[in-house]
Image 1: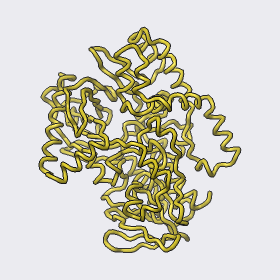
Image 2 (image 1 turned 135 degrees about the vertical axis):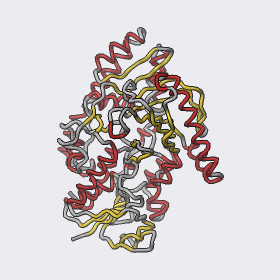
Image 3 (image 1 turned 135 degrees about the horizontal axis):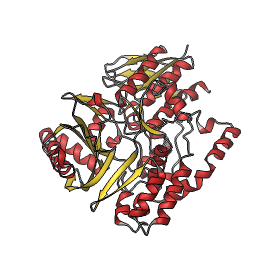
Image 4 (image 1 turned 180 degrees about the vertical axis):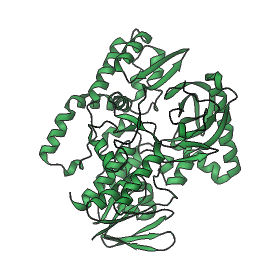
Length: 488
């Protein structure tokens, strides 16, 4: 029986392990942290649980290929309860608010009232979202391994949406929002994600939501990872935690195995690198093996991370509906200045908090320059780094209290993460929690197959192979890596 060694126990690594076992291989996963899951994780603070990852999950609609994949690896199933929100996000601006409802017609009617001169643009937005609902991420097999008939069927299925993909993939959210006459709507369409993303990113995200394909599994990230890990182990797979890999051992055009940080060598017939690609090609093996397309992406495209602050509230906070965005006191975080902020309440997860209380979470987008700021601050003065995080968290509390006066005086800081935290924790390139920013420029780049030229038995399984990455891409990459080895 051939043996596959998998570096990294995140979603990609766990999925690769499950399919390795299904396809008749012996496999072992080596994860540097104490728990599997990578960035799909959470932790406890003072009796509260902080979920680091799942705000909504693509692939929760049972008729999709992606749901079938999630079910096959144990992430979802008939016994997994789902949370279905009635709205995607809400923006507050000049004492008014705009909402992206799950009900598209309600969204249309309300937006037309808010932007009376923008009726045509609003109708086009709803029409586009409706067309994009038909887009489905193909995860049965890699595109280059599909037959001509399979490719044709995929093209037919996506035909109605392709013109919108081409049109809005080339336009930034900032440019798209600028077409609206209403100041509220101009702000609204830039509130959910950074305005450097293309308009297609927001539209496809909302389309997943309206199609019932973007719900949240109860228990969040930790419980989902636990189900996947148990599935892998039930198939005979072995997970080694606290087992950092130092190097992929290469002899000629083949890998012979891996060497751990403690010096122990593990022999293998195949190696799947399911960790961050910057770790793969800057630590585990020589950079000369990096695919040219990936190298080009690092040179030409941007990445983003987040400054994340979590708070405990002496209130259930059920009045905060999913994600809400509103004006805030001007605040500097890293090198960036913000005048708006978003808040998410986890009131729908009673196990995350003691009775009558809730967790609030705030995210601010951070750039590569912000990452360098936090990295330099930490390496120069750890105490100053900690102090700055808490100072910002206290400033955030002032803005939350002003927006939701009923919880003024009831909020306390639970935890604060910077882009440097993400980097040190998972090896994520410059703290990025996804891959490259889905900008108009990114649409010009090709996806990576995971094949490494010059190595016969080493394959990538990473969200960095596709833009913008994320959990679905990680799961697909794990499956595809094993299919390439098994030639299935």
